[in-house]
Length: 287
Length: 269
Image 1 (cartoon, rainbow over the protein chains, first blue to last red):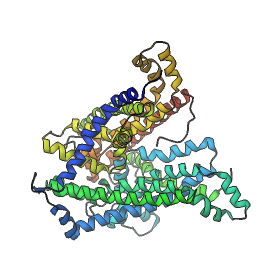
Image 2 (tube, each protein chain N blue to C red):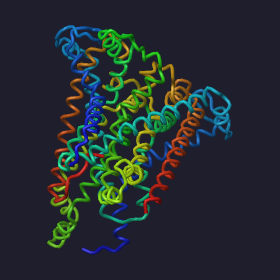
Image 3 (spheres, each protein chain N blue to C red):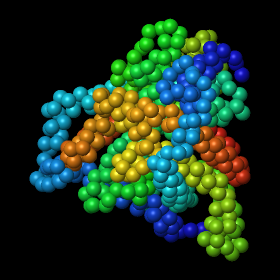
């Protein structure tokens, strides 16, 4: 049955409208509100005019805020790097050394932990790394000194986050490795390159889009993580999400909290764009 | 296939790292000691009994169930609309609208929760289980859309045209032909949204106004060392539940694609 483009457009719009309206009301409007609040004057629980950039100035001038932003950024970048580097060989193994009919099974095994309760996984680390916890008591049984990792809050936070987001990184890398034309690798080796050089000059650059996608998928939730600093870091090393919570909920300073939220979205946005631009270089280079 | 013993053992080691903490759950859930540490002290099912007797926990579980069922239903329905529209029709503004719907996937959840919270507090809507449902639906809908899009894509357009040619109305075609074919995708979407919602913490915590909800309750209890073992017992059950639900969802998804004549590849994401 042929449809004119106009009636097709009308049907499509009608069909998508419930979802679109839901998202506009509950996501677009709230995000716009946060943006507006961030340039308003605020007190406890109230927002008022005049419009001002003071909230952002506050963010720049108070070194503790800058420190928390920077710390979140660095922790997220370290976690991202660790996760991606650790995941790459796994994705490579599944793509190149597992029989095609067994690949789904391996991927399923890798993704299952992601689907088990995040709160339980993080809480478990709290029990593992804590004072006299599973790790230190195991070391004691073997006759080694306790590591007391819990007293190194930032290190614990990095370990826990790297574990929590690990499965995220494998899938995109795997997908890009699957797309690598196997005949290119044979060509490389036929032309006398060693296996390692072929990997560095062919496979790795061709799989970079997957690596960058993986980095983004890990970076975005880690930079905004709330639970891990709260539980594993015992609240002593707050990250951005904890800071936003303090301003918005505990101090009820909506404009200041909104400014932090906008600033952190900007930070995520800038890093994401940087990743995407980097990605473009590889797509361009592999013509 | 070339053998790669080094890579293979690395991958197994990696899996061990991924599963390590989860494997500790059953070990210490059955361990007869309040202190979660080695060496083990003997076998007990006492922690499961303690867990089952906890009235607050039951309340929290009931609330979580109400939330997860509602969220899974609403997200899947919203997902059907969006996925069907984006696969089948061309219309103006499709790109921006679809990106808006998928946006929660690339936004830190804290930002979504806080933005929603600010608006709710400003217009004076009291926080309740209902507001948690509203927020979690936002998070789950992109997953529903992703799963349902692949279900609708594997649909053969000519079946639909045949039904219309034979005099069915668009609605009866949808009900009699399309719906049964994408049913496995709908079920998979429902199960995955249910699992995400059941495990979700940030929105449950901030939009729930302290109502007992399972994930929030677990988060609170882990701070009391005496409560940890019964939480591990609970965790063991929840992990089992997640694995069963997801195994079933994956089975339905594959059956759906196979039914429509497609080729199964990859996992959920």
